[in-house]
Image 1 (tube, helix red, strand yellow):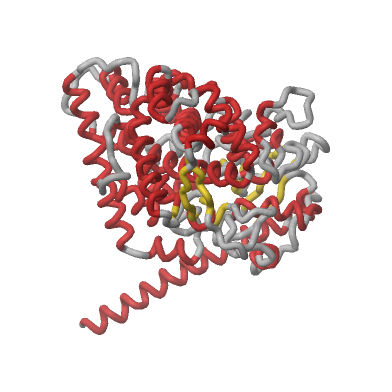
Image 2 (cartoon, helix red, strand yellow):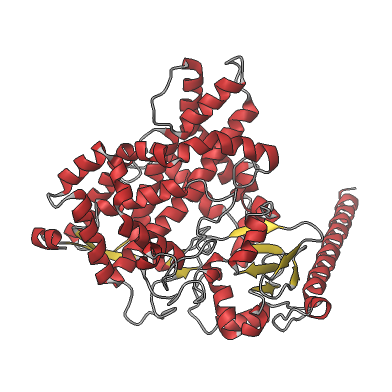
Length: 545
C-alpha cells in the first residue's frame, strides 16, 4: 500500500512539474515574441534579440567591458554610449527575462512625465512581489487608489518642511552620537566602512521622526535595527541566482515573521498608548502622532482597536524605515566622497557654514541650530552639493505598469512607443547624466543648482528627478535633505572623510566612486560600502576654510 501511494504521489508531483515547466516555456515564448516584434511592428530599433536568450547575451558582452560590480542602474547610460542607435527615441527596450520582466528604460524627462506625472501610472507588480511579503501591500509604496490617497493625506503633514524643521533638535541628538563615533574612529586612525556607521545613524534619526523614541543603534544593539537589516538581507529584488536562493530558502519565512514581531514590539506600544490616553501633542508631529490623530478622528470608540488598521500602521512604519534609511545612507556617503574628491567645492561648503553658523566652534553651532533650526535652509551651496550628489548617484528610479493601448510619445518626432507588457522604468540615473540636460554631466558641479534661467548650467523643469516627480514622489525628500544638511553642518568643517579605495581599483566615468551591485542590499550603494578614514582638522584650518 505504501509503495502504491508513493508511486502515485511521484506521478502527481511529476505531472505538476510538467505543467509548471510548460507554463514557464509558454510565458518565455510570449515575452520573447513581444520584444522580438518591436522593430518589425513599430520600426523601433532594439539590441540584437535572441528568442532563446533575449538580450541577456548582448548585455553580458557590454557589461563585461566595465567593472564587474557596477549597479544595473548604469545600463541605460552604457547603452547610450555603445549602442546609440537603439536609444534614438530616448528609450531602450531590454529583454532580461526571467531575471526581471521585459523593460523599457526611459531617459527623456518629457516622456517620464507621461507616466510619472500626467498620468501617474500604478507601481509595477514587481514592486508588490519584492515587498508584499513584508508589508502585505499596506504601505504607501504599494497602495493604490483611495487607500493610497487616505494614507498619503494622513502622513503628508509630518513630512512638510515646517514639521521636519521642528524635529531638527531631536535629530541633532542622534547626529551628535554619530559625530562622537567618528571622533573615536579618528583617534584610532583605522579604516572603517562609512556606510555601516551611517546606516545606524539614519535608522536612529528615523526612530525620532517616525516613533519619537531613541533607538541608539550607534551605541548599543536594538531589536528594530537588527530586524530591519535582516529583512533587507532576505529581500529578493529579481530572479538572479542569489535572489532564487533567498526565495527558495524556507528560513526566509521564519525570519520575515520574526522581524515583523520585532517591528510590532517597537512601533505599536506608542500608538496604542497614545490612542488610549488621548493626550494632545505639541506642534511637532511624528508619524506616531499622525496615525493616532487619524484613528481618533475616524473612530468614535477607542477600544477595541481594529487589528487590520494596526497592520496597516506597522506596514507604513516598515516602508519608511526600509526606504528611508537606505537612500539617505547612500547619499550621505556619496556627498562626503564627492566633497573629498573636489577640494574647491568642499572649501565653499565650509566657507558657507562659517558664514551661516559662525566660526566659534561646535558648541556654538549646536546652540544656534537648536535655537533656530530653520537656519539650515540658509545653507544654499551645501544644499546644491547634496542635489548634485543625487543627480550623479540617485539611489533608485520609479517602476510603473501601463494599461493596454498605452503608448509613450517621443516629443521631438511624435513616434509612439508601445509599453503595455513592459516594465516602465524612469531611468533618472541615465537622464541625469545626459549632456543635453546637464552640461559636463560626469563632473561634480553644485553651481548648476544655483544657476539662473538662460545660463549654461541652468537645470530646466522636469530634468532633476532623484525623488521622482508627480503625485507619487518621495514623501520623505524634505526629511532626507534636512537630515543630510544637519549631519554635514556638524561634521564637515573639522573633519576630513577620506575614501580608502585601492589605487589600482577600476574606475567608472573617471572615478573609483560608483554604485555597486550588492545582493545583500535593495537600492544602489557606494562601492564596498565606502571604506574611509577620518582626519581631524586643526582649529586654524577650520576657521580659515
